[in-house]
Image (cartoon, rainbow, N blue to C red):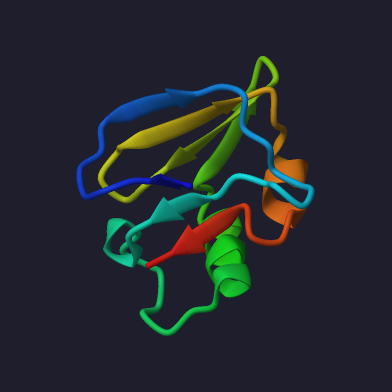
Length: 92
């Protein structure tokens, strides 16, 4: 698990396994996304991020941008793989 705290800056990740029995997880604070309901499930949270344009893709990498401009870029993973993999993204 990769846990991001408030104002985490601009992180780059490689070797992230979005699926499978030993998949990795990106864990974000709900408060980093102003539009994310405090009671949202992980799936609802991912949908909220998608609808608010928090994901972008470029050069084979997916970037997640929070409400404060902090970014987490995951190399080698496209948006569809990252958002459709159960447990790849969590909120706390």
